[in-house]
Length: 511
Image (cartoon, rainbow, N blue to C red; front, top):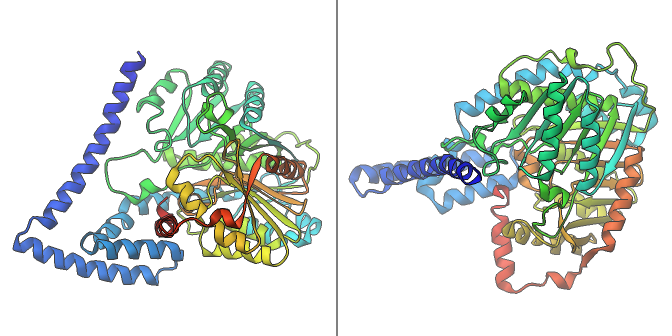
């Protein structure tokens, strides 16, 4: 049965790969077959490439993106410009953008159903007003009170807490994950979901098609439907060259009845709970929130469900405190946020930058990848030069060799500025956490790399003076005890390695 399933999966995915290769082959043949017509086409495309390069330089994009595209066009002047046009200007991308805008505009007021805590939050912490104001007034994600927080690390802790909360569900369970893979973790969750469906609970699942490309069969939504589980596949992978295929749903959200929510780096697969070993011990982090702020993740999920299913949701129908008050006591300020690559507003990056720029004593960072643009490098180095204790932990055992090799290319510059870099020696560091000055922290899905910061749908929680803040800090300090500090002399590779690292940084936005 397993072998038959694998063959069926392989046929479907291989067909997609073959169709893409055929498209590229036809395109190259039309340009390079040696006739006078193809010579004319070649010169025309070269001129187009030149004009496209000029267009790219004038855009208000990140400098690293401009450099990468211009370099690629110079490298292949015949194909480069046309490829950029095919990649960037497509009706599918524009249509998706319009649908997303419409959904977000219609659902925005729903975030404030628990009440507007903006004024009291600003009075409570004047020094963090810019962060709170940016997220609520500009990005549209309100700050909440009456919310309890619990930091969960490693993945086994999240797994245990998630199963316990799923068992308590009475009205609905909403799950949105980048990766789902059959095994102990997903199997345990699935059994509860099946049972909850029998009890009349509304169970919904969103997963990213690219994230699950070789992990789930193509007809998996039909299988789930047989069990009564509603399913939506985000951005199904299609055999066409499309910019929208680059935008993936990298979020990890679990919502139970709108009263409890989870997010963080942990997907629904066994390596995340160390049930299997892929790269040594998998160090990851998640956060559970109970109370008003959980509603924010409910709205985020329903927004994505509306986009995937092309329907209009009645958000008020799912609000859990229509007939009762939220009785959770205040545990500081909690401000969930989401990030979309379609609105040209880098919310995740701005949350990180605000924390770095506002730090007075320290900022401690966990990240699996460290591939950043000049603005992030400047913020980190300026903080360190100004006397802030900046420490970053990355993995010692990598999951992607080229990405890790490129990550290490940033060490020299950062260490020279006074930043302390560590590598987690027990295995793979997959947590995405910031903590600063014993007062603020953020836990979420956003890596310090170009894909997470600018291309993917992401989410996180900004925290002020809540229980989880010190839990994040204490966990970071414990992690340092089993991490190797990188010294300046450790970064003195040979000339060839340094050249390769610098060369790969040209393609950092594509990693």
